[in-house]
Image (cartoon, rainbow over all chains, first blue to last red; front, side, top):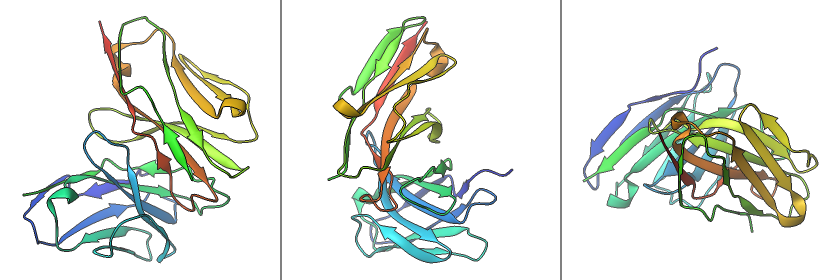
Length: 115
Length: 115
């Protein structure tokens, strides 16, 4: 069974640029969630995709967008990067959400630095 | 409102000491799920346990044990006979219908175990 993988591992961008982060879900999982973890903080929910549709969104501006593909892999896109976007971006996969039973398996993360 | 509070920011112990990590949660839902994750320096979140709101039995897994008390909205985690390899950041998280598809994380407790 393949776990959750993310690419790239590290990324350095400058303010105003755009970035795309990628995630492959664990085998058999159809739901992908993205989290942002700033230094010294807990992960903050960005959004979730279920069967290629957005299925919930946290308190993040529209410049954070995503996609899920038929094979359930996913992308997180961030436009007009700001310094505060520097963080560890975590992807998590799970089976279809029901009643909040949302056991999520996390990937190793992508560390984004915005200069 | 959904909220998870981990009041202990950092804990330092010496090997073989027992240590308890506190977690207090807030939710209006009657059905909810509580989680503990471990985040070693590598950054990947490692799932430790999931507990639903209807199961208040304490659980023990090796050196790990969890104490769930609905009366005090707490879900505490104890490591018995701590080891250096237990050094990590530990996160408590909440999932429920009110939270939608998100896991709500606390800010984490950094545990340092010295030899």
